[in-house]
Image (cartoon, rainbow, N blue to C red):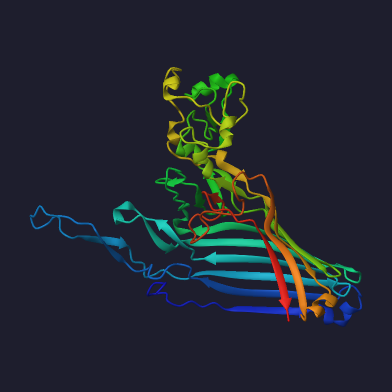
Length: 448
C-alpha cells in the first residue's frame, strides 16, 4: 500500500566481520591490550516512512460547476493527487570500520567507528509545472552522502575504593553532501509556516537541497545590522535612511533583490559535533548518576522573532534595543511611520525587491548548548532497618530531567525543531515549539 505497482518489494542485504586480535599470541606478548577487536560491516536498509496509498491518484469533491446549459451548479470533482506507479524504496548503503580497545583489564576502554552512508532514491515532494494542475508530487529525487566519526572513551577510574566511579564520554561528527537531484536543479524544502512568517513561498525557500552542498543549509539575505547616521549618504543610494535595515549587496548592482541577493548561505542546522558524558558514582549506601549532553556549531532559525520583534505586534524585550540616535549599534531597525519616511524624500526604495520575504540572517542564532539531561541521587537504607520492616530492600531517590541548560540561544529550547518529520524542512527551525519540560521526581522502592 506504500509504494507503486512497479516497486512493491525491496532487497536489503548486510554482512559483518570481526577479528578479536587480543586473542592472538603476538598481541598478548605486547602486554598492552586487555581487549583489541577490529570490525568491518556493510549493509543496506530501506525507508518506507510515507503514508499508505500516496502513489495512487485521488479525486476530490467540492469543485462544482455548471454544464448542459443550466445556470445551477452541479456536483463536480477534480484530481486531487497525481499517480506515481514508479515510486520505490528509499535505500541507504552504509560501510563501517571500527576498533575496540581495552586496557588495564578493561578499566579503560576506547571505541572508534568511521562510517560512510549513501542514501539513494530520496522520498520527497518535488515541485511540478503548474500546467499539470498540481503543485508537488511525491518522488524519488536523488541521493545524499553522510560520513562521520564516532569516538567513545570510558572506564572505571575508581574501582577498588569506598568510592566507585564509572564514566563514559562520547563524541560524534557527521558531514553530509547532496550527490544528485532530479535534473541537478536545487530542490526547495517546504517549510510552510502560515500566519505571515514568509520563509517559504512561490519562488523562495529557507532551505534547499543543492548538488555539492551539505544538507540543512539555510539561504536568504545577509543582514548587516542598521544604517548609522555616519552612513546616511550610502544608505540614500539604496533609498534608505539611518536606522533602517542594512543588507549585503551581493552582486553590487545597487539594489537588493531575491534573485541577486536572496540566496546566500546564512546558516546550517547540522552541528559540527554532538557529545555526551555519562557517570555513575557510588559511596556506601549512596549512588549518584548523571548525563550531560550537548551540541556545538549548529544554527537555529528563530522564526518566532519575526513576529515578536515586529513593530506592528512585537512583544519582545529586544524591542527596547531598537535603533535610536543614541543606540546605533543594533540590528533592530528604527520605528518610523510611512508618513515620516515619505517626508525624508528618499526616492525609490532599492530594497523593495525583498518584499514579504523574511529569510534574513538576523533571525539566525547559535544553537549550541550543554545540558544536564538527567541526574539521580539515591540512598538504600541499611539492612538493620529493612530487617525490622521485614523488607528485602528500601531505597529512596530524587531525580531531575533537563535541570540545567547553558546556551546563547534566545528561544525556549535549542533542542527542538518545527519541521523534523517527513522530510519537510529538516532541523533547525523554531516556530513556537513547545519546549522540553524540566521535571523533578521523588521515588520510593520497597521490596519484600
